[in-house]
Length: 138
Image (cartoon, rainbow, N blue to C red; front, side, top):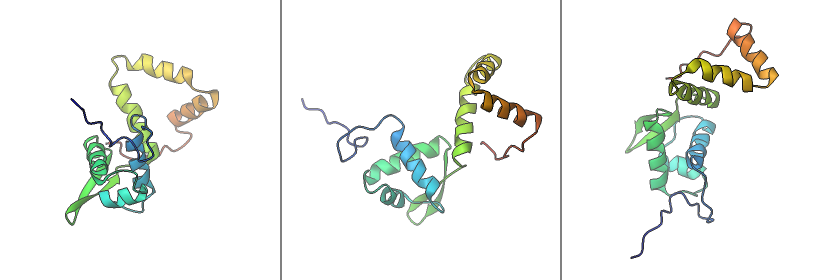
């Protein structure tokens, strides 16, 4: 019995992408855009490397993860990131922190792993020496 191999994650040049790479490419295309994009527009910005259905699937998954907003545009949806790249990184960090039982230990180890310059910056942000950008992390 012959089994079908999924082609959605394999670009047309034949090499398989790493996990999350497709979502990253789609998200990067949306972040570079001036406004929300439909799946067809996203596909066009990716130089046609992905099928339309693959782009729709990726956009739907990112929307389900609350990384994208979507609004109706004609017979499709137009998608946009909920925040910029820094905001998305902060959300990922917070989500990881929310999933551990001992936040204090994790935060202490995180700070211990930082280079001295990042640790100094974090301390300055915590005491209010620099205004932290306040953008909702949803």
